[in-house]
Length: 167
Image 1 (cartoon, rainbow, N blue to C red):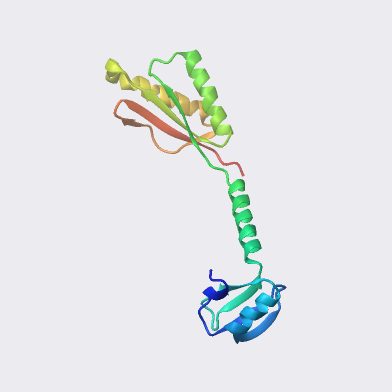
Image 2 (cartoon, rainbow, N blue to C red):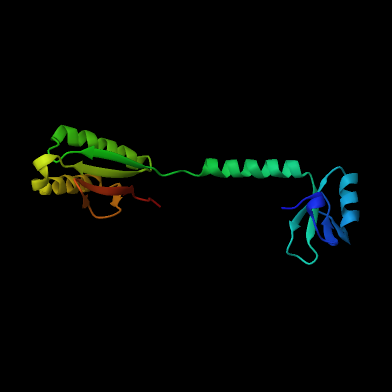
């Protein structure tokens, strides 16, 4: 966005600070008009014929734009992926505890990644890990959708659960 002396055209269409059309005038006259009102001449539509310039307080304009961006960012919610790790031999109480955490993450609107980590010779019994993940999916099916099928990557078996959208 070009302002004041940065505008490099001969003639511009000028709009006053209160939105009223002042017509087409040479750039020098438009700059004088803006200075008399103690404002800046800001090019708002450079592609128009002739370019459209507005008389405004550029500092105030930049400030309000920054505030709008900040407010928009504040209203955005970022969805995080929370991870719960366990082994294939996780006992019932520990599993229930992990399940409670996964449910809480989903209720808060986050995605949950459930990982079963195999150590040493546990890799020979990956079916225990598959059962554990299936049990977790069944226990959360009322509030979660599976984003993908369980995947075995190296010594880790994982699945990502996302919260169900209620309309």
